[in-house]
Length: 165
Image 1 (cartoon, rainbow, N blue to C red):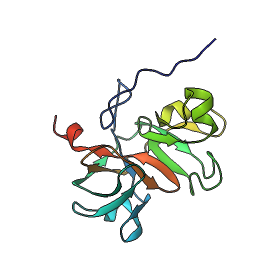
Image 2: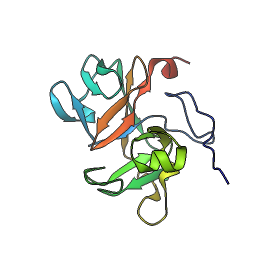
Image 3: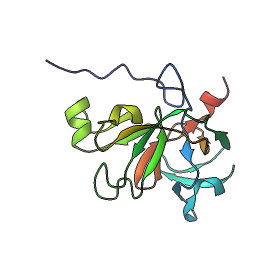
């Protein structure tokens, strides 16, 4: 039996239909920028971030969103996806796309790389469903969806096309 991935959703828009916090990073996340690693809340429009797919990219908007208390999230403990991936415990919106470039991408999706909603990584033992405590999240909007380096993970950014609907 072959397990096929769902059809690709456009990047920069919700990838889970019922509830979305879009592409958002928790406050305190450390993101790789032209100035080095900085907390996501210190990134502003005009700053440059380092992306996997487009090199240096300019942040067009940095949008703060307060996650509703009890909103579905996914908890990835430090090293859940391998050494330093992530570097520390991370709580992500369940539809935040995570870039996989290891055996999981090959085994699950038959590809060298896959961008999947964090919820699809939940195994119930190590990576678990959780809920928001109402903390701030940050959406970094770039010209095109791009893989950002965040806490040892590659997470997909928001894009202007998704914000301007």
